[in-house]
Image 1 (cartoon, rainbow, N blue to C red):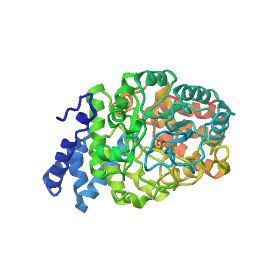
Image 2: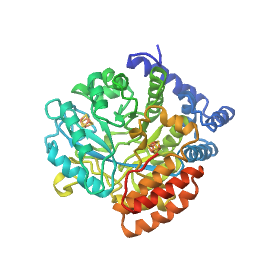
Image 3: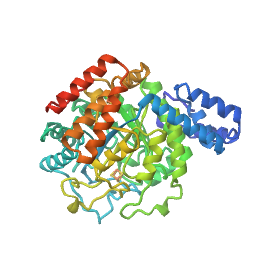
Image 4: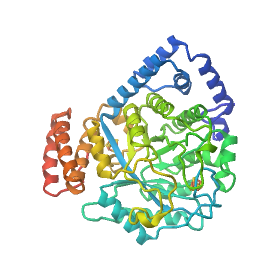
Length: 470
Ligand code: SF4
Ligand code: SF4
């Protein structure tokens, strides 16, 4: 039986309930009064149930679709403003004992050179990332208790936080490692991680088991309850996601929202972020094997409806997506993007030698180009990491947002971190654009006192001081 608070994965992600919802949505896909009622509820920034969101997803009426996009855009502007938070992935190790069919790091891929970064390698990688201007990283590793034990991950986190090159610093380390124990999550929490990220890949159990034929990841129950253990270990910022294209996207969409509801109902805090990767070609992986691959139009619709359904949850897209596709989804809901990513182990310090990409990158622009592009398209690239460092985690972002303080907190932090970026890393052209944007954005800060403080701090940044935050 479906039970959102159950400890068992198959009860809080309940196959029968998902199929019921999909049927209900199909029956109501042309039910205009219901669709309009759902959109009216969404417009109150209260979010939607998974059932309501799925009715929107099923609907193909062009007029309603336009209303969905307009509403998603409005919600995004209202809650997040025009800020886009920037981050970069850092691959520590690609040793892996799992057998994921869609990932070239799977244990049986003998063509894949294996590498684990030493602490000296990490210093080189992080220095290269700091020299681009990054402040926020997502650590990525394969699963291998011998080549990548938890002690190695913890030591790497300590190394990363300790590196201060010129004015650079990594101020928030998010971690994407395999499902583990409550004890290990507690250790990650103590090491000062930001968000713990783990993608479900697919919520459809038979497909999950087929796609993960061996290794610890084969265990659907253990993988799906990872966030429960993370929460029990004290991590209240968790990031979920599915790999769209492994199974039918509608099923996984319901699963994703059910997972969010489970966390909210059980721990009082929903996911901090949702990532929306899609199947991409990679070494030895043919997309033709994935008939459920999601096209651009559907992808945009998915992002827009997620924005309406979980308005206070960050939505992340990576450089797997092209510039064109990222533009489309930024409009309707995405709040975080990676920039100038390298998906191989050791690739920031030495791109030529890496040869271990996990997946192909579509957006290959430099960080400076991505920052310039975001500004050209009306966004403020933000390198803010303030909440985590001020102890604002879990649902505190939501409280900030609900109290209408985004404009007085996130906006100013975006402006000040962008200023740091312009001073330390930007090309002359980006700097000119950025200075113009900052001038405009400062004027928009609602609170007089905050606006005044930001102006003073901008001067101090010019004089060489760093790291201001609200
Ligand atoms: Fe290993 Fe992760 Fe790749 Fe699976 S997706 S093979 S667990 S690195
Ligand atoms: Fe994110 Fe907090 Fe910074 Fe706002 S202040 S952008 S919520 S880290």
